Image 1 (tube, rainbow, N blue to C red):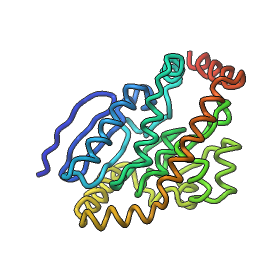
Image 2: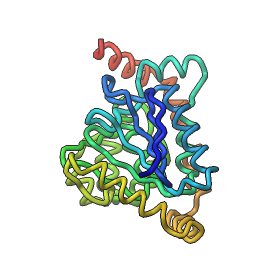
Image 3: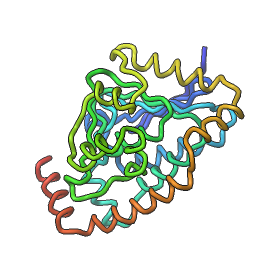
Length: 253
């Protein structure tokens, strides 16, 4: 039996043979990401990158939710404090060299959706829903979504999702090519674990080289991420973004 070592927190990290399982574990807040969670994710990716025993990383969410995106209250506080750890996570997941598998159950909003563009295999329950509400918050897309999403799903769908802010279900995500398959809730994690283990067991050098060719020019993606981040930060200072974020916080109260 594979040895599993777990650290319980808002991000649970479990080593299962050649796979590092990373679970967003803040279900009471719909796994909304905080700065501390981003730090934990950055550490997990860094350790997986440099650990020769790890061949793949599996990302999931606890409590029937993948991630509702950024925790807006924590996000606003981080911006005011000049600390944007989420930007480091975006860079790390884009530059990550080993296979990434995602298991999506429930909501995948904002970064919870755009991070999937950097995953090699994505499985989701039929009930899952996806949303990219950046423009509605007076902000811009991140994680290279403005480059990667139209390439993946076409300009029409990318415009509907990114500009019009239309949410979409698992069936549309599958048809568009964002998902590899939809899987029943009770089989999701077993399926994702099996696929991640299969990847981790393959000849490592050939696997990573093939992945590098498949994913294309990493520098182009990283350059787009930096351009998006610059525009994102400038948008944060705009009156419309401040008004939208304040309205969101007040609605939560």
